[in-house]
Length: 254
Ligand code: ADP
Image (cartoon, rainbow, N blue to C red):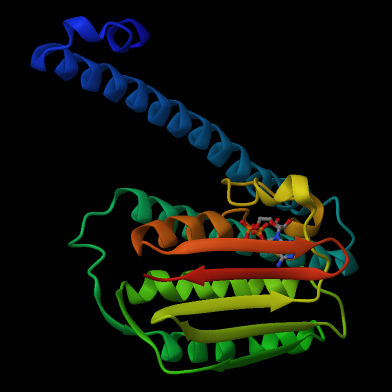
């Protein structure tokens, strides 16, 4: 690539065609590498709950558990199965975002206020369980988009604002229109994110604290779905966070 670019004298239509081809190959190789890494991560992430499930089941099967502990073991199997199910659903959501054509993800006029209302009502119980006050305020706003994907984006951000919080904390969902552009803000006064992690949280399976994410049922894919959803809608996502103080995440649509 360098040689071709560094030799402008010889640039002709043919050569510039070759440059594009070479870059295309590099891009394909990069995409292929990312796919391989993703597959390796997926199989690791799937195996973890599966191994727990088969381990607990085997112990019960061999009669190695006291009668009074069976319920406890069944509960663990249930938790791991739910985790597995959440993981499979997120993997499917993400691959649909990556690979689906326009037919599968039809863009249509979508009411953002209604989506925010839906997310608020679906997460109110989980917020109450975690003793986090979760509020929504907003104005009416509509964009051309894919309803299901927009719902998943707002849901994942609010779910995080509630999960990575503390009893007595707050999580707020705000829908504004600024300079004619709809803006969704999710802010919390929870645990916050360190500077060095902010750049990485949108990577697939990246978690700042793996055990906390597992405890709260996180898949490590929530923010990757937000990122790919933002790309699909030509929206910009910004994160502002301080450990111990809280996190603000904004999505601005065009
Ligand atoms: P997870 O399923 O683990 O929540 P996400 O992709 O949604 O995965 O988020 C990636 C990581 O970013 C989380 O594991 C968590 O460490 C961090 N994170 C995301 N949102 C917040 C937040 N509001 N406050 C603090 N940490 C957060």
